[in-house]
Length: 90
Image (cartoon, rainbow, N blue to C red; front, side, top):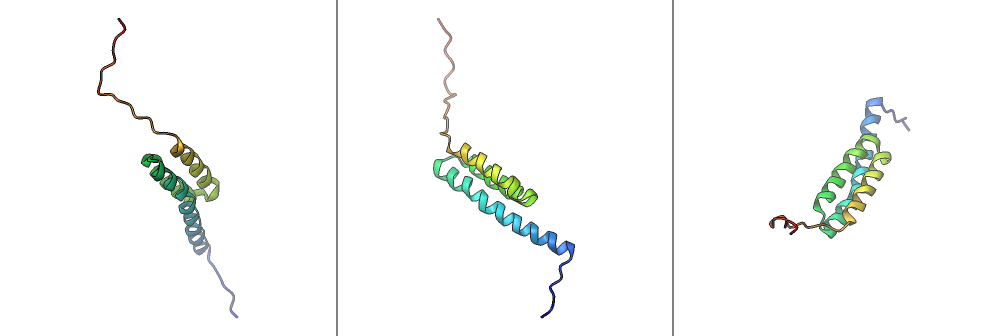
């Protein structure tokens, strides 16, 4: 059997691919939760943030981003009605 030889560049590419896959997997949590609760903004920001964080620093950055945006997506949305003018006290 022949030995498998990897150059440093190959190793960096393989780690980048593996870290990006981990970022996608962790990013699915805020994406699914946000879409189910109606918080699309936090869903997509959490997914993209986990994807980029996974690529840059793997689990060290992807997990906190996914956790923060999952918690933000679970919060109820506040709908403000700005069509009416505020009334002045009499």
